[in-house]
Image (cartoon, rainbow over all chains, first blue to last red; front, side, top):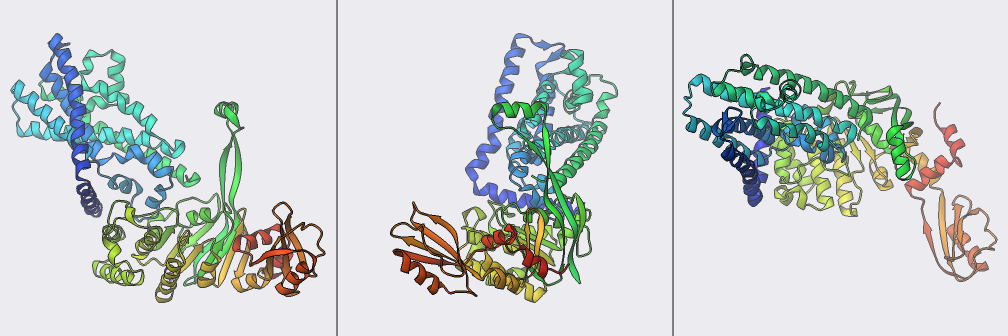
Length: 262
Length: 339
């Protein structure tokens, strides 16, 4: 574990050397997501100007949900972006073999191979939204709540990674996993709003099947003092279970790869 | 001691079959049909520690598939491979520590990183002891002339520079077994020479076991005393290179560019036609140099028809393999090969 952490540090240092070399690209990449996010926020703002309360949720409360899911997504974006490109960049070209001839875990190697700086912009936007929301609503941050926030963001990030890992594994069969990943990933758009505004079916799916709800709605509810019962505390459990499942799925994919090659 | 032992090793791929055209594609979507293809078919051999063996065959013969099984990337369909006493797939990580691979067609280095940084990272991945790492880096820089290249990103390197960089990265953890899959493909003679020299030296100093896949007979001649030839997944020859050269190098091909028709020529003794192309006005003959000589064949042809030019070629590796497999020489091989 310590070995992998220090190895990750080495990968990260080298990655930043590359990023510094392409300075303009680095600045554009890490800030461009801010503009994308701005467009999404503008939409909410326009809608909420017309209807000041969304099924009982104010604009600032929706921002908390939006902020949490954006933070969770940015963790995935920074540390696990290579899951998107595994198909065309690694499996199809045979480059994946490189990971298998080295004495480290191939999944670690894949993730460590490219830290994605584009996620930094997402992280900043998410953090800004959480701050804005809590200032406007006058939330009091006790140490427990700060701890809760950190754990919620990490669990949310893990949920994003686990779902992407499951869909990325399809690359071992299909060579290209982006369409499959896209379909599942895009459902997180629903999780930018209170799950209570949706039909029961959608909220069930986002809770138990594609549990992005635990990366946004449930922890946000707790932080805003809204009662969601045990759901407020299930996030880390769901994340851990999903990670375990996704890793099993990944291993099945690896086994298939060693049977067929690229 | 055997560093590599391969016993009855096979790899069967399932390939989906499609009829041509859009109709075929739609049909395959609803009723996919599969066909089994044995890329490697019941191969057995053993390589001793410190030995350098050429592993050759035409494209698609199964060379890369074999190497992928020996590195643990692919799981054999049947039979078994042992490298340094281990199962390379089941003990993939332990195997990876002591094995190095160069896939000539693709890089294992980071495209955007300067070579020295790539090497540092590789050294960390393999946990090379820092003092040892510096020592090897110094040694490799000298032998492969990496000096100025260390600061250059891989993406800015020429093919030859890239291959030297690859070799350094592959050997920096001092692997006991090295697989080189076409390490000299597309390189100029000087770089080829340097790379061969480097491999030879590694083998001499560290008793590195080397399996070399190549289409360049020169690589084999320089480095290996033994070759294994496979074709269509089957092992068809395993023995000293000298035998191959005596047996199959005895044929030469001579091509005449003729002024007029080239059809009706009485063949000189010991020669046989390989191809005559009257339109291109070319006549190619093959002769056994233990029976006749090039000058006798040429003189005999020139007596009969007008010859503008002629050229003499030694059969290259793939044509030797073709000859071996075409059956013309199969009986001889069967006799020579220990049962």
